[in-house]
Image 1 (cartoon, rainbow, N blue to C red):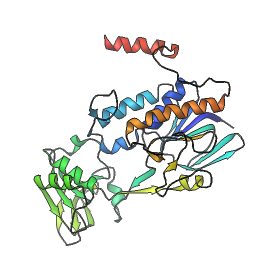
Image 2: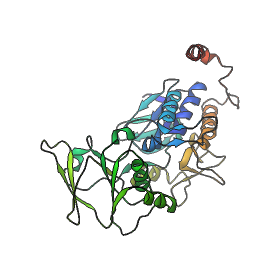
Image 3: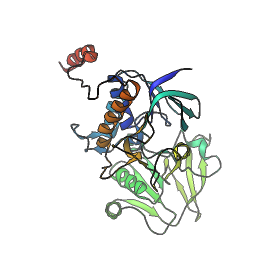
Image 4: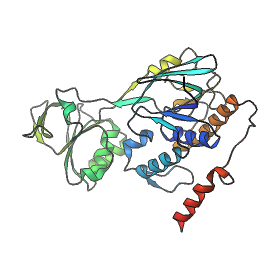
Length: 338
């Protein structure tokens, strides 16, 4: 039976920094991420500019994600992608972590699940899944792929409206279809949308997707009112659904609020020895929901994990500026700076 020192559930910003710091503290680390890549929810707005991470200049979410992933993999943690944790159970001194693919064992576990395991609500239409690798999209990674295209956006929430505003700003020709008579976005977003050249069709839903001759791409969309619209890309933003299996497995042992956020002690302790929680899944008084907030939580959780595994380990931080683990890496960094 193989087990790891520290198993981190979630490969978003908090989980990646926890992986880095755990490696710095000499822990063997495994990351389990339910998505197909690391970086967490940053993948849903890669083109957006992020300003609010301390010490990091404003940059695209894509570039920030790349830096986070690179840092998180510094000490070569074991990474499992496309794998969801279903339940966690402490058995004597080990945690048994059951996923959709494997059973893992760990001395400590850090929950860094963000807002949870979520996936987009997809179109419930026959054959829709056949177009997901072509021009039916549920999230937008790089807007350069939308340049000079006619994009039909289905959705009336703020995220759909925000993307309509962004794409209509000199990138694409946009049609917005929503099923209700009014848009549900923030007032400021709606005002911005009204300034853009976006064709808005209300009280309609997508009824049919018609393909091109070889059946590889959507060529036309049929709406519930009978309208037929030629399209290059269909972007569906109907919200997200959450898988609560992991949280359900923890309810007997871990306190949660009505929003299924974990109520922690000393910011990261769950009440179960060896099990810690960080990031947006956590709630305590006066917590600020920023990416940056997860970093001190990550280092605290790792320090607790290190001390839990090795009771003789001294409390306190390990820093990178005077650390022999970085001797060779520092030489490489300096060469790149020359």
